[in-house]
Image (tube, rainbow over the protein chains, first blue to last red):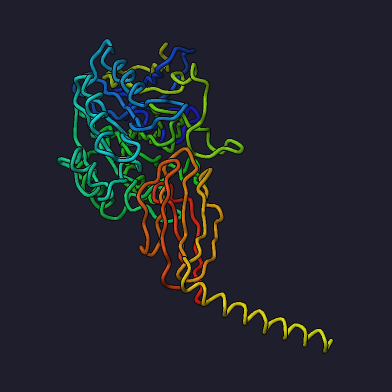
Length: 311
Length: 115
């Protein structure tokens, strides 16, 4: 019963979490030194069986610059890596900026390429997916079946509750990402029936924590959503938008941003930088692009977390 | 002092006359255009002042798409890729705050002055 240095809430949460552990593997398209990335231990509810899924993000199909002359090529390489995974993931989740300019041809190419993995795919939009004349209608027509509003939805899989949020609609001058009152009301109702030991995974394009407000890397009303998630023993937030891996922890909520499959962006606040594409030598490009595999195992073990880059 | 003021008045009168002639010639010539470039996630200049009837022309020089969107809904460009342009003619005086619809932290304004 000794506290062992942890706060009362943390300790209680950890006890609840010992039922299963989540591990995250972050992959890049090029070789490199293995590093590590963490996903917190999750709630006591046992997952039905071990499973994995893949997060892919920021494919920006249509992007063609010296930095990456064809985003479709690197996207195809990422999808091939997914297809070659030894244990087949249950699904792929694309956290947005599927396209560069919301053109039909870009969405078509993205769909055709991602189908090469032969897996179920879910999508939420990034701000680049809202640029058609209908301000996101093209994305919704294609990917929004079963969703509400600007494309938010939730589903359950193997005992885990997955929530897909859209924070790139109705952006306001000077603001960051935005969830909006309708979506927040939906989220409150969606979570109401869930027991606090249900593991929750939340997807949103723009980070749900104030990683770097000057660059718009945050969500203005995220605190309202996070307040609703606070009672859950394990919440994992997976974001995109910033084209690099960053992490944060707030109580029992862990946040992870993902790499792009198209181009990297600078670290937050790098001197003289802007939040746009960051030039790297051609032979280093694939070392800064990648996908993320998330593994859920029903085991009472410490987390084994490995971050690998691919050759 | 007196002579200076007199000179200033005379100069002012001359200027006024010049402007009057100028205005007449404006009526038949194209309205002035102000240029704004988009680069490095900024609108430059951030504030542009034009007379009513003028056109503002935006050019995206950045390596990422941007858009031009007024806060009050008066104008809204499509997404502009590198090298693309958008123009809007301002027919009413006022202060038009605008931002990039893709990167909303980018803010700027157009001040349109009545003649």
